[in-house]
Length: 165
Image (tube, rainbow, N blue to C red; front, side):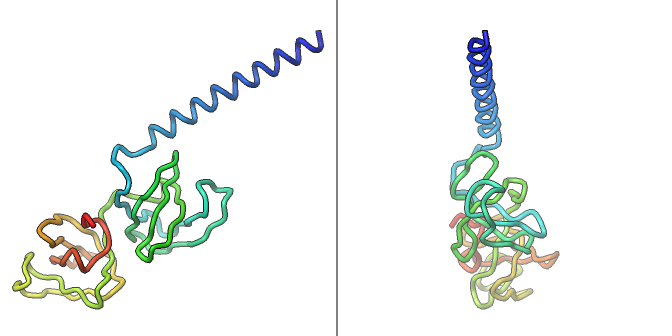
């Protein structure tokens, strides 16, 4: 009876592992976005760690301290997203660290923020390289760009982020 008990216990253990694996796969499919990769996201926290693999067991290769920094999601694995930052570095972030908020970072030396989406429109502000802002209404090569309440239109080619690039 000792052998049968161990065999039955092993079968229950295996069955339990199968159920746990099925539940994990279901959770992963629910957490996957309905949009195809790549897609744009932004950092949602004041501090976010990029890891070398999709688990807390992997070491951090970067620590970001810049909320709203745009990232490109290039792969989805359960609750983990492989992202690329504006400098091209890639790694994994937990989905809770990311937001769907459309943001961009100025990549030109200076990007004029204009009153309207036109080269001839008056420049109301200037944003230097590295300035991060929220993007909206990107069309015709222009985006509405909001940097802490300072709003204007910027050329989509002057920013890296959710501009359809």
